[in-house]
Image (tube, rainbow, N blue to C red; front, side):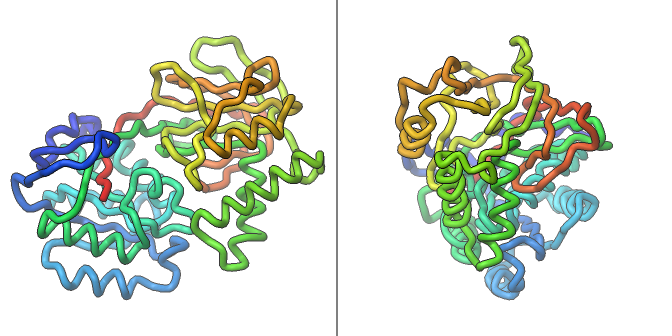
Length: 349
């Protein structure tokens, strides 16, 4: 297996920075070779890939392949490596992104890390909205291919850490960007049963789910305030062993609707936010968090914890989610270890 953590500065872009530094001029050393991996079962692709194929047919460069399983994805990426693909376009949702990241970082099909581009082609596409191509799946793909061929448009490279998630009952680690437990797991179950089935997708679906759960928690409705006993250790800190309302571990900088519910100041790759089962001043804290503002009540003494850390070890009851995929622990003694698994570079347009 090859080392997938090679310096991404060797990508064939002669310039490039994080978009937070603003727009800038650029040139390309050579035409990028593009590979597109599509998951036909992703939420945004279930009506078919006809439009995607039509867009790709208008451009001679891209290599397009479909994949659903990890084995499929590894085979596609190995073909991309043989064809010297520089830019891997992921046409799928958050679960598809997780599969591709696992294939890249665990199976290591590339001698040199490619640049990644994410299309908003999932049911909610939370990761793509943080580091992906703006616009719908078809509009984003057209804009991307036009940029590859003409260089037109503002662009930048966004670098993010990728979480390595080791689960004692799994044969191999998973690599992803958003881990959640307690009310997050419950909310995703609710969203799938009651929101997605009504045809609501995108940021509206998790937004409505959040509103429903906040209202339920504030009203102390037991259906929406179910907590989960957990044991959590952050780096070398003392273990936290208690019931928690919310557990969030992520490497994205933006969740749906622009939410940034983390406020740690440490220089470490994993954002961790925990809310105790019985937090004080919940309405005040949640309302200010939704606006991106700080609250003087947002302190550990009131049940709110947020740190940036390098490693998390936890035992979860009641299930957890990784990039929108739901998992149930094999037992109450199942350990989950989350660490920095490497860094990926994403194209923003």
